[in-house]
Length: 264
Length: 264
Image (cartoon, rainbow over the protein chains, first blue to last red):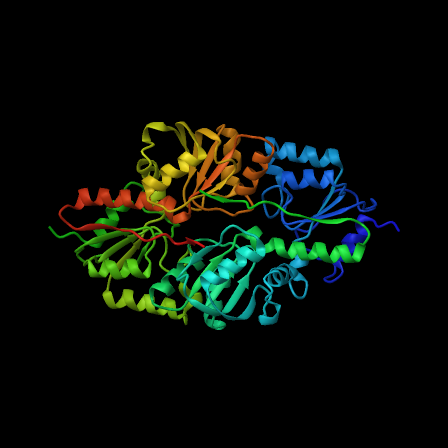
């Protein structure tokens, strides 16, 4: 049975319905092309695209944009050699790339957040699901134990911690991606009586400085900053698993990348 | 000779003249108060303010805002216990706090950037000074050697690196604070033929992903992310040194903080 790119996109969009204002779109490729293989990734790096081509994938579903900006507007890059080489690789391969950012965050529940919670085996501890955050009530453990558990289960080399590593925690707020800003994180500590907030990424002078002050005031408060990719890749991995079941026997690969940063 | 807070502010503002639109302002305290001691800091954390009070400082000059946002608008925090306790400490002490962000960045040269370059002993290597960046032509060394030199000279525990740690570098761009975004960093690599860019902070999916792609394409390109505070505190330290000379024998202290993040 032939499956077209449009059919896969329809499947991905169906839980929400077509959005008017969204960064999600078919960046390259044609909707009526038959899908021969699907790749799912957090970030379509140069290596990910090369590997996808080698694997015979002709539809790559990516959470973040191809060209280093949320709006993925490459106008500023017209003469940039890195941009040009990446665009040439994509064009010559004919690979279709679909950006799946807003839809998957709007699934109920947000599949990017729930993918992380599943990867942590924390589904049983979910207390409340907000649009931008999920609250979990964990078995008592220290910040360092949570961090170690994250490193082990998510296979990430490090997290960054603000506050006391030996602080005992139960109530945690989880905010993936760039939801780590102060207006999201700071009110949540009081509203949800949280011991620790776990974020992907956010400005350093906002939530991290709030948590530093709170800790200096003797409050039992900590922050774990995972990294943007580290917090969102598990959700895209969960999507790949779902698509494997839906489109079997069509090959569906989750395309993993190495950590963006090395500690030096 | 009596020195008023206003006289110190006049001195700080003089190189630029009064700005219309700025986040810089006397957040607390009165301009006609006599200065008994000056503190200079990157971030007025709860500990920094406590220490300033203990040292008899009644004017604290800070680069970043008191309450976890660039605009330092605490309206959202009205009932927040961390905010309230910090505000009470400030009010009960009567300490004056002056935000010095925009002025010092507009000094010619930007004193926050030049303070970092001085702390690295790189003044002799400056090639070009742009409003948002400075280009240095360094003696040939690897990314890892630059990182180690930064850790040693700036006494910081780590930096984060994208690209090959063993890449040999000469031409480096330096962008302090939150200037690490893609629109600042990406064009600079080509325009200035840079091997490495050194930034304070920026969105992970912009410049870092650009550098990852460039490295995956085999280009000799790397990025060092220092941390926001780590990149800007040296400039405030340089200001403290200058004020010590100007206002001698008035006590002027640089108020240092421990690193915001621990690697876990």
